Length: 209
Length: 209
Image 1 (cartoon, rainbow over the protein chains, first blue to last red):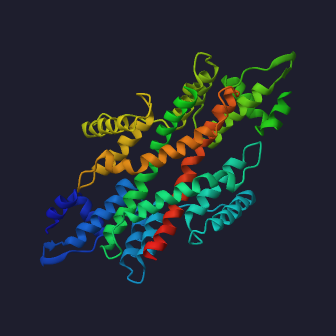
Image 2: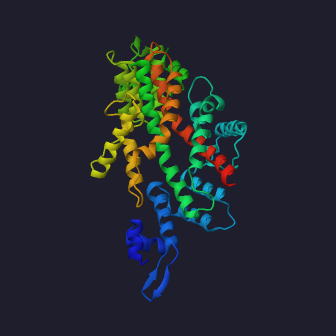
Image 3: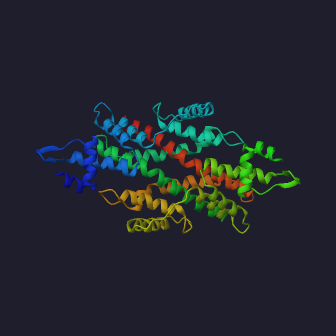
C-alpha cells in the first residue's frame, strides 16, 4: 500500500499518518523509490490500534508508545500485553495521605478475599481506595470495603468473564487483540454506566412512581 | 443547634455553611437573638445532601440549586426527585451532527425494546448515542446498538434493581433519599469500573496467562 492507500484503508488522514511516522508510533514503510514507501497489513492493524487508543480512549502519545513497546516485546505474554493496554487507558496515582493508605490497605485485603489473580500495581486497587476514601470522608457512619464493594463483586466477575471470552484467541495478531481491549475499556464503562442509570430509572418508577 | 454545632455535626466548616446560607442553598435558621440563629435536623440532612452532591458528585452550585428546588416541590414524586438527582450528576448534551442523530435514533429504538419506563429526556439515551457514535466513527465494520449494548442489558437491570431496592422507603426524609442516590451515582460507576477491570485481569490470566 502507498501512504494514500494506507490512509484510505484506516480513515486516518495522510498528515496524521506522517506525524505518527515521525513520532515513531508507526514503523517506516519499505522504500520502493527515494520518495515512496510501501506499507502492509501490519501497518493497517497498528494504525487501527493507535486510533482506538487516541480517539476513543483519549490516551496520550506517551502512553501509546508504552503500549506499542509492550506489543513489540516478544517476551511479553498476551496477558501482560492486555494489562498494559488496560493500565494505559485507566491509570491511577496512589496517594500519601494516611487515611487514604488505610483505605488502600483495606481494599487490598478485600481483593485478596475475592481470589482474583491480580498484579500488585493494578491501578484498579488505587481507584477502589479513592472511592472508599471519598465515602469515608463524609461525616457519619464508617463504611467498610466489604459494604461498599461486596455487592458488585459477583456481577463484575460475570461481566468480565464474558468480555474476556469474547476476545480473539491468543494466536490472533497482537495488534488486533490490543485494539479489542482498548475499544472495550474505553467504551464499556460509559455504556454500562448509562444502561445502569436507565435501568435505575425504570426500577425507581416501579418502586416509587 | 448553633451554627458551630451544625458545622460539627456535618463536618462542614462554618465559613462554608455561611456561604451556603448566602447562596440560598440552606434556609436561614430561626433567629434566637439578633446575632444568633438556631438550626434543626432538616438543616443537618440538607447539608449532608449538599456535601454529597458537591464533594463526591462534583456537581456545580447551579445544579445543586436545581436538585434542592426538586426537593422542596411537594408536587414532585419521589421518583421524579431521584431522577433530578441522577440527571444533575450525569448530565448529557445532545448533538446536532446527522450521524450522531442516527445513532441516537437507533439507541432509542433499542431502549424501547428493553421495556424500561424511561423519560424522553433521560441523559442516558444521549450518553449511549455518544458511545455508539464513537464506535462507528472508526473505519471498519458497522456496529449496531444491539451488538454494542445488548450484552449489558440484563446485568445492568440486575444491578439497578438491587441498588433501588437498597434505598430507604418512600416515606423516608426526602433529603436522605436524595443523598443516598447522589452518593450511589457518584461512587458506583467508579467502583464497578475498577472491579470490572480487576476481574478482567483475573479472567485474562486464566485465558491467556
